[in-house]
Image 1 (cartoon, rainbow, N blue to C red):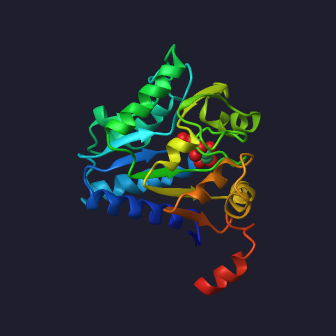
Image 2 (image 1 turned 90 degrees about the horizontal axis):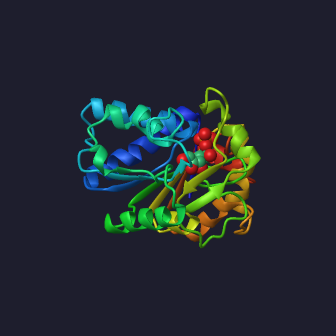
Length: 250
Ligand code: F6R
């Protein structure tokens, strides 16, 4: 099911509202978190909600989708540092309950197994947040990833390196990362995907309307029965029936 919002700000507010409701329904919720520019306004809205007394993160456990290989948590481009900066440092979450794959591991295979075990021990993910790559990736599961894949070390595509270069002052994005697999993501009880801006329109249309295909990892989400897409008009622009839907919503 997808909903198209007038602006990316509206989509971010709506997703933040969903997260706040889910935390308030279950304060010990296990969240799956994503990084990337799409999520930044969502985390800003969550900080606002926390400051306004609408939500506490004290009982929340979190697992991020991915982390770059070879970056220490102190590197400003690491997803650990990014999550601290964008969310964790500004809310009452217990950082001991916030998890990311260990990008500094010397043993990626065991790190994947360790991460999967931690998620299982926490009771599984209640709500997984996702962005989508221009090439249809989810997490860092690039095109060609098996739908049965689990947390592992992957090589990033050139397009992903280019898209993420802006997050690095010297534009040198690590070429490999540890990511939850597609099957790990599909194990979540609920999934919320957000896509905004024209660069995502093609990937969104393929994910929602093409037959499930490893060339578009996000198309695997059609096999999950509790997925909500939060789109702005630009990201929804290539959906076949978007004009009809917008008119119906007006
Ligand atoms: C981030 C992640 C990626 C991003 C995707 C979109 O943890 O796993 O799949 O969600 O690349 O990135 P942005 O939002 O920067 O366009």
